[in-house]
Length: 277
Image (cartoon, rainbow, N blue to C red; front, side):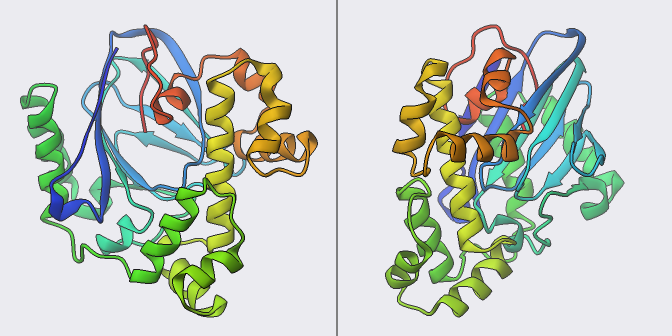
């Protein structure tokens, strides 16, 4: 499988964290993977066979053809069959607001519903014409640049996200408020308006995200140590959050293929074809 990330141009870095591309051999049977929350909305365009995204809590299912999705507060399951080729974007937490879109928390909006069917199909066709690599990534970034209404988040939102990200979610909201030099009510209101969730919930998602990253990088019996390192009260507290954000136990998660989770944490996956998101 080929998987690469690309930084956008400087003018888009307040909106887009990175552009990603993935290509793999055809999958002869359906492959399912758990997509874990990471505090970022995104976009995915299928250039091969479109998979699906499934919310096990609500039961909703979407075609993973060309869609924008918001910050997730619970797991989704991605299913893929056939040729897995995607181009996508991971936005900054406030990226959808910069594009004039609603937060879409735990929701997916088809790209055709945003820009129109012809424009959406035209984008996929243009991306297929570009070779895998920088040119394809630049084409997707350029498409979004033309639709960006603002490239800067409110300063207190950007500062709050930095504070939470730097400490991997292990920070009290009161400390974030002091760092931002504002009041709790103002931070909550502005943060929720631009990100779609409050700063406390965002911190919980980020803490969990790094907890899972530690599990992916070590043996399963490291869970107790990791729960302490990542600010959980105890291993039982960590286990409850794990089940909440993945839908399965840590043991079950590590027992199945979770190439996407590894890719999201910057880990290489050998011979693990599958869609990104």
